[in-house]
Amino acid sequence: MICHKVYLIDDDAEMRAATAQWLELAGYDVTTFPNAPTALAQLNAEIEGIVITDVKMPKMDGMEFLARLNSFDKEIPVILVTAHGDVQMAVEAMRQGAYDFIEKPFAPERILDVIQRACEMRRLVMENRDLRRRLSDNVDIDQRLLGNCPAIRHLREEILNVSDTDVPVLIQGETGTGKEVVARCLHDFGARKDGNYVAINCGAVPESMFESELFGHERGAFTGADRRRIGRFEYAQKGSLFLDEIGTMPLPLQVKVLRALQEREVVRIGSNEPQPIDVRLISATNKDLLDECSAGRFREDLYYRINVVELRVPPLRERGGDILLLFDYFSAQASATYNRPAVPLKDQDAGLLMAHNWPGNVRELKNVAERCVLSSLPEEQRLSAILRNPNMEAVLPEGSSLQDLLRHYERCLLEQALLRHKGDVQLVMEDLNLPRRTLNEKMTRYKLERKDFT
Ligand SMILES: Nc1ncnc2c1ncn2[C@@H]1O[C@H](COP(=O)(O)OP(=O)(O)OP(=O)(O)O)[C@@H](O)[C@H]1O
Ligand SMILES: [Mg+2]
Image (cartoon, protein in one colour):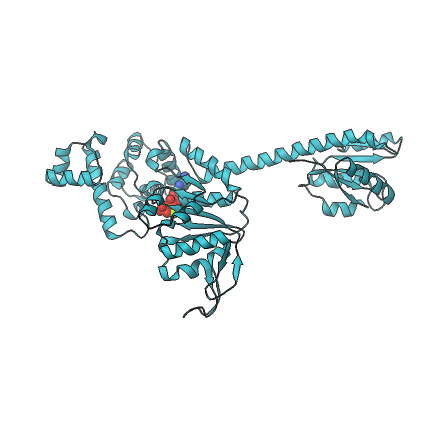
């Protein structure tokens, strides 16, 4: 930040022009006003500059002008130009918060030094404010994306680092890890926060609707298009567009999205006229998109275009003590929402939470905490009962097939039994009434290893 702006106020036009010219020659960017009221209409607490004002002026004198400036920003350096010998006035001005005074008539060289120091002071003030503002934003992001483990701290830093730029970001992470929270933070803590944040879940849009959803259509473009519709790209103008589950986007549409990103324009269906777009693209996926590329389900050129910066959201099981921190947080939240007592975490509960694999990550944890708060069981039994009986919807992504749900449920039951019996396969067989071979096959299929439970 360079501060070399000078606001010069003097009712004497000749004097004003001469001083301005001289300051400009010295490298300052000068704005002049013939009187204080017009200056006040233009000045505000954001100015990155200093004020030099005459004292004796009609309409409003320099002293009152100083008081008015102070009323909205005490840290704008104001240099008063006083009549020669008016020491009393000068002393009073300094007492009222003027930065300095110069006596008329003055030799320009003599005031350069004062102006330079005043500018330097303003620069420091503004830098400091900017820093404080950014720090308080950081406090906010701490409260949005919770967690103290190194990976989450690092993630928050990365978000703040790229949020002010326009580079496309791809967020990768398992289901329920907080990808959407990250996307929202990128927008809310970035330069486009005052624009729209427009999210679309690519997995949830029927293929036939996709193009119109993203690019919009003109009236009569196809049967049923009875009015013009603006697409998501256009809604996100000057803001951010979040393409969630981008891995599920149909291939023909991928071509169109790629073109829109390359050309920075979209064409509504039924129109010939391209609309320029200025959006920041954020995408998320829980699949490995490079795998999808090699399988021919995702276009490589699109992959490289959306993935200029990649943010990885770690699975909950890799976050250590954050599991307990988040549990406490969600349980307090649920107790406030449902007006029930919070469930204080006991040692054995902490053990259970830490040992759980959390396939549904933060979403699952949140669901478990809520169910704990709402459960009618005695406190000490709640957590183990709930973990033994997972809520599938909280664990798998929305729209999972019945087969996925069943498989997942089976895996959970096996995992719980192995935990309960500390990896003793014999006891698990008896408990679940399974022949050894079947149990072995299932453990292999679900990548469950005995040694992880002993
Ligand atoms: N670090 C976090 N701090 C606080 N809340 C979080 C955090 N991470 C996730 N959550 C909460 O957990 C839930 C799941 O998060 P989110 O929807 O962002 O996950 P996701 O990765 O987008 O899931 P999916 O893959 O299913 O789309 C939300 O209720 C979200 O608010
Ligand atoms: Mg999501």
